[in-house]
Length: 221
Image (cartoon, rainbow, N blue to C red; front, side, top):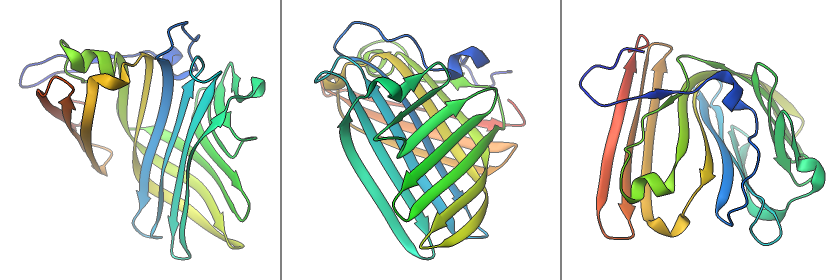
């Protein structure tokens, strides 16, 4: 990628989309996020899976939110990790209530009573890490990917199935995440089409400093 306006962007290879080998530190974690919206059908969602293998005997954080004209489905809880939750190509929890998988393509699935989803992602640009490095900000997100993408598939709620074709932003982070390095944060993203997207991030660190940074991607630049 060409970088305009200074700064650096690290581009990760496709192999990093697979789940990584867990470290031994109590704060080692791996998380996957998808935020998307289909303007035409008025459906969208926000998902996060957080794998914390060394916390409380092994924990999966599940955030599963789906919005349709029928209403809102919301689930946000930490559940115990089961042996089958992490495979070579997938991460999930609560008997596949929410799952991320990668086999050359990224997919998300939801399997809840009365609510299901099968979604596939197509990236608009390389998997970039634009996080500001140095100081406590580096402790909070040591390896971090953010990618604008197209999201297609189906969402079914209350017996009605919606065909999804929308814009999304995904992120993926792994490594030792020092949670108490951060007091609060704001993550604002937008995807207008395949050639225009942005990320804007503000981190309020525990030493009372503010890290503000972001980027715009236009036509892979």
